[in-house]
Length: 165
Image (cartoon, rainbow, N blue to C red; front, side):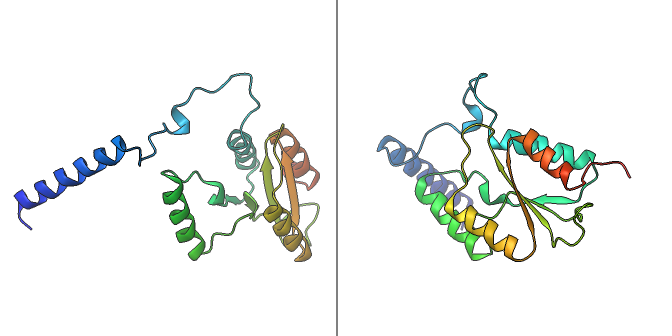
């Protein structure tokens, strides 16, 4: 393809995009990150989980996040396509937000610890999450539902994390 053909194809794609925008076929809602947040609103689950991750890092706990709750940008159709792609390579709806690989100091026989984060106010556990929690518990895992960072940290401390030896 020549340079002039590439330019013409790019111009046609851009013009097509703007035609779809004018026709109302493209989601032009600004990303959530650009919207103003009410300072009196309860912290988001994202904010609460960030605080827990900060605490886990400071306590030198080995953990990782499961990105199932990641914001999938684009139109509803684009998000659906992206979720199907993720599911094909192993993403599962309802899997807990954080997996703690460090053994629980006060529960060494537990197979692992999974932490589901919720907002302190208004967060609810979905049926898919409840099913995963039951499955993990039946496999010997400890599952915590932290309703806010403070509650999650208290529960992690009860398992022996963050305590000085």
